[in-house]
Image 1 (tube, rainbow, N blue to C red):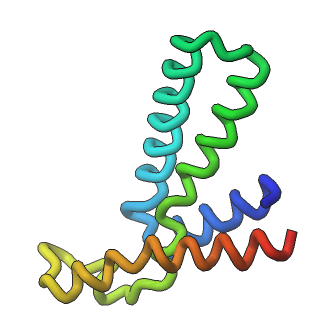
Image 2 (image 1 turned 60 degrees about the vertical axis):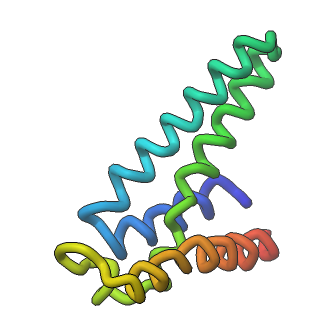
Image 3 (image 1 turned 60 degrees about the horizontal axis):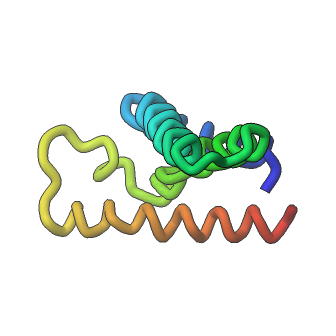
Length: 108
């Protein structure tokens, strides 16, 4: 996938759930990249390779909630706790995200 498509997918997820998704995906991306960087430093990975992989991991981690666009707003934006059925539905966002990435990836 190109960087532009990745950023568009992240923006799509953010627009669907602006109160939660935007800041959350940024934090997950930063934390994932930092964990990788510490791992790479401890193993003596070449700095140029480490920077490249770190950025890929940051972007990939930020896509983890892209599938929320497939979840009904009645569940996604519900106040309070989800019912067990709603929670089961919410778990499908990972599958929807993988499907979106497969579609976008096949067009690049």
